[in-house]
Image 1: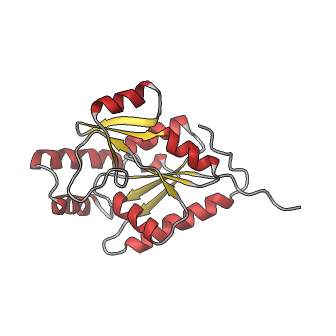
Image 2 (image 1 turned 90 degrees about the vertical axis):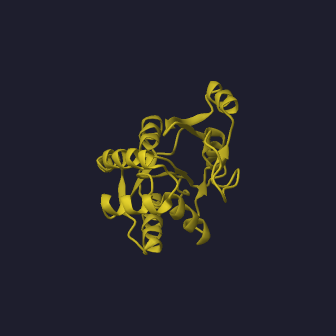
Length: 201
């Protein structure tokens, strides 16, 4: 008798701002990682080079409110004055197709998803140190000095939340592929783990 196929996973990739979540996600897609990414909705303005539907779903506050009222977000939060939400519909459709789903969110969002979907697999992407994270954020040059300091204070608090995650992966300088391979290995092991309950939304 053929063994049943493992049920699809809901993988949550999180970590402090500037740790490299976006770059890691992009690299995972480039190397053909078999995870279906969910595009987060946000009310913040597009940055140069960003595309609607690729980095984020850029919504007006009114559009965001409409989805919120319909309870169509898996999790939502206001971060640095902007609103973010993970659309449930994308997750539902991918899981129904038998695809593993990947959600990129902040630490607060990961905690909200864990509360709602305890079967989710939470992976924390960590910097080698807070000092290194500060250097990366300064090099981005996307925040005013006051915003940068606020992000660093938040990052220090978020680093303390690592224990709430199932796995921690360190994103070392110049070793992005190593971090991506580690994430893929974790997903593969968890996928085959006996007794893992199916995801319920």
